[in-house]
Amino acid sequence: KGVTDENGILTFTDIAYGVYRLKETKSPEGYLLNDEVRTITIKDDGLTLEESFENLRIRGSIEVLKVSEEGTKLRDAEFSLYQVLADKTLKFVEMKTTDDQGLVTFENLEYGNYAVKETKSPVGYNLNQETQMFEIREQGKILTTSVTNVMIRGNLQVTKSSTDGKLLEGAEFTIYARADEKLLHPLAVATTNNEGLATFSRIAYGDYWLVETKAPEGYLLGESIKEIKIR
Image 1 (spheres, rainbow, N blue to C red):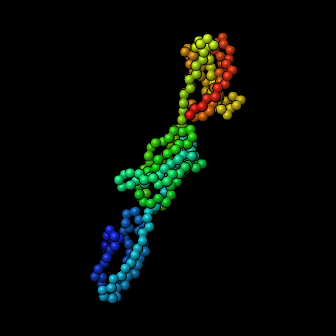
Image 2: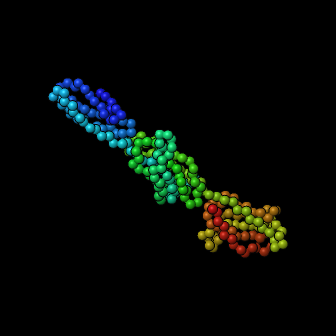
Image 3: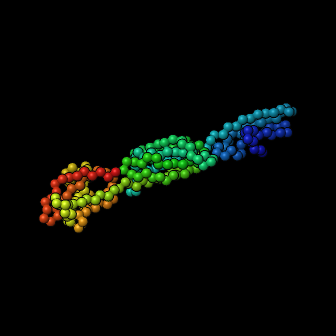
């Protein structure tokens, strides 16, 4: 039994006349064991026989699932894969984008350490800045992880006043989705306070209509419809 040196060479000396079996019993780190068995015949004095064995690199894959807070699978999220080098620095390998199932897969990765970062979020969502770390150690194994994105949300404050500048309490405002052209499905309602302010909180990313749906006492209903964009 012996172990190869830094040049990949192992030498057995003074082997007596006869027939032998030669096989690899432990592979180098990061490589698959070569299970081939060779027959070696020693029949001439002083003869040196040479045999060469090859090892295949251990390879695996990394699969990332991109979801919203509600568990919806998100497409068009961009992920970048990096190899973690011996000095802990990151070397860029490749970039991929999630499909309709929210999945991205980095395949056929050599034995080693890797990092995955989201480098572009889906439209309407905040970027997840967490770095995911992986170790490829087993042949053919798929390492999996799930990355969640938080939807972009904003607030809207509406001020209601009379033509002479008086702040008006009791005006009701309603928000509708931009696609709801006939204003049939209200999404949120807010009423102005004694300072003439109505506040809508945590409105999801998107386009909306803002409509006054009830006037303050003693005033006519405002007829203008305003388009609101949450970005």
